[in-house]
Structures are given as C-alpha cells and as structure tokens.
Amino acid sequence: MNAPHPYRVLFVCLGNICRSPAAEIIFKKMVGEQGLESLIESDSAGMIGYHRGCPPDARMLAALEKYGYVDPGIKSRPVGKDDLEQFDLIVGMDRENLRALKRLDKSGQWEDKIVPMCFFTTRFLDEEVPDPYYGGQEGFEHVVELLEDGCFHLLKELEKRLNI
Ligand code: 4NP
Image 1: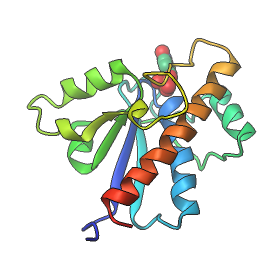
Image 2: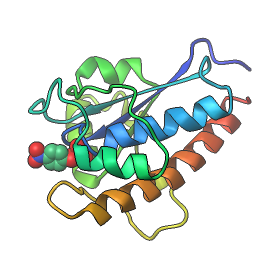
Image 3: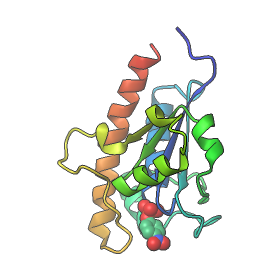
C-alpha cells in the first residue's frame, strides 16, 4: 500500500545546529541514492530557538565534509506543536530531547511518533547521540558515524513499513 503523502521524518536535537541537521543531511543523501525523494521527506528542528536562522555549526560541517556530505543550506529552527501533527516520525537525538518532545505533546496524542535515534543504530553502544557542542572535533566525527548507522537502518525500516 502506498503512503497517501510523502512520509515525513523530523530529526530533533537541542540547538538544530549540530546533530539534527547532520541527521537530515545524511538521511536525505541516503534517500536520494535510493531514488525515494518523492516518497520520504525529512527536516530537522531544535528544542530551543536560540540559534534560529543560523547555519549548522562549522565543526559539524567540517566533519560532514570529511565523510562526503554537503550542506544544502539548512537554517536552524525551533520545533513547534504543529510539527507533532505534520510529521509521521519524530526522531530525538538524546534522552533530554525525547523528554522535551513528550512535554510538548501534552495530551500524549503523538506519543507513538516520537522515537530515539539510537533505536535504529546497530554498530555502536551509545544509547543516545551525544551532544558534541562542548567537545573536540572527534566528537563531531563520532556523531556522523553514529548517524550514518542510524539513518541507514531507519531508511531500511521505512522501506519495509511503506512497502517500497
Ligand atoms: P545540537 O548541539 O543540539 O546537536 O545542535 C548544540 C547546539 C547548541 C547548544 C548545545 C548543543 N547550545 O548550548 O547552544
């Protein structure tokens, strides 16, 4: 059965300048390589609006570039209540993001859509995608590797769910 509209995935972290834009860039590349852009859309957002309108952090972009990814021009934006309704799957990077998303979903109506990124990772022991903001460059590169693993298996899962 085909989805009635493109399936929409929202990646969420705290600032939407490191982890979630990286997830969006990596996932979009994988979706594009499978020719699935018309069936699976993705976006990213942050729990705080502090970096609204800013591009991804230069250290994240450097790590992404090292692994062969190019930023299409993502600008940070805060997550809103409407996102809970409009996206089919909301992927939080760490426990605090997930707690904050569940607080935003006051009624619990969208609970089933909110999942941790590390639900999809297989090659690493991390139970959450660590916040690289206050650490060194190796932390950003670890985030890229973790997200490549998670995004790959997330896409496999969606291909199964959507029968594509
Ligand atoms: P992100 O990283 O949540 O992966 O985008 C951070 C970005 C900004 C801040 C913390 C984490 N901050 O404290 O401003």
